[in-house]
Amino acid sequence: MPIDWDKLRVFHAVAEAGSFTHAGETLNLSQSAVSRQIQALEEALTVPLFHRHARGLILTEQGEALNRTVREVFAKLAMTEALLTESRERPAGRLKVTTTTGFGSAWLAPRLNKLLAQHPEISITLLLDDADLDLAMREADVAIRMHPPRQPDLIQRHIATFGWKVCGSAAYLKTMGIPQRVEDLDAHRLIIYGDYRPPIDNINWLAEAGRRPGTPRRTAIEINSLPGILAAVRSGLGIAAMPDYIGDQLDDLVQILPEVKAPRFEAFFVYPEEMRHSKRVSVFRDFLVAELVNATG
Image (cartoon, rainbow, N blue to C red; front, side):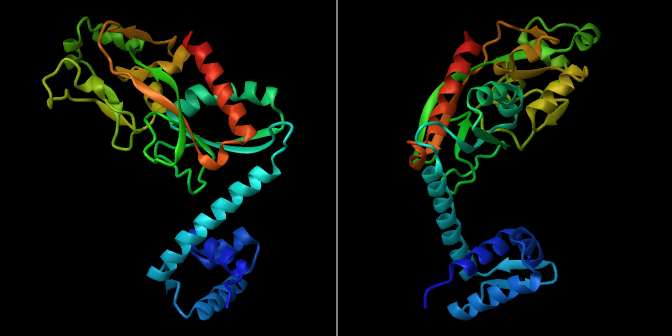
């Protein structure tokens, strides 16, 4: 017998939520109604889909297999629905954009007002995450990534090349002195990214600048987000290398060691093949490119 779509929708909600209660809240159904739907689906398939225990629900092996397929089907349906309902005359509807916390909060968010003023029928969901969300599974519609895309089935466009600026607060440098050579950083408090850092090559290059390979200098503190690092530098905690896309947000800090050779990193605009003809995507892409050209001169 064919599987009921309503039961699959309930199953997917339970699998994602991990409990009948939370799935019921999402679906606006009672816990007992959700439980009955899952029981009926298990009976129809003649396999258990969940292990039930006191702390919640865990998918069985069969449940994992079914949820992978169901998640992909619903993601494709959502993408198709968005494309079908998009106006042929003008861009409209919601666009889910993901990028790193640093670029999203420091560069992109302050500029979205200009985009929405030009295209008031578009709405933006901005998902800031230093891990790559899965565009194929519709976790987001488009991405701005600070590395070449690793998935071969995504359309990509190189949109910018960024560098770094080494900065400290005036108060910190007055107390600790201004480094004249990169080797002088050995006597300073360095702030770098922690383990959960954005996927940018050589992001903690300052800890190794002027040192023998494999012998990084000791750092004072690790922080896993650019806004946190910027706040720490402003507070006088120490010195950090920050991406130059921050622009005038660094104006209250003192740039040091401007001659130091810093690595560069590339930014890419990425989206699935299915979104190729979306007007929302093309409008957002053109907006990004124009703003980056203006920002980099």
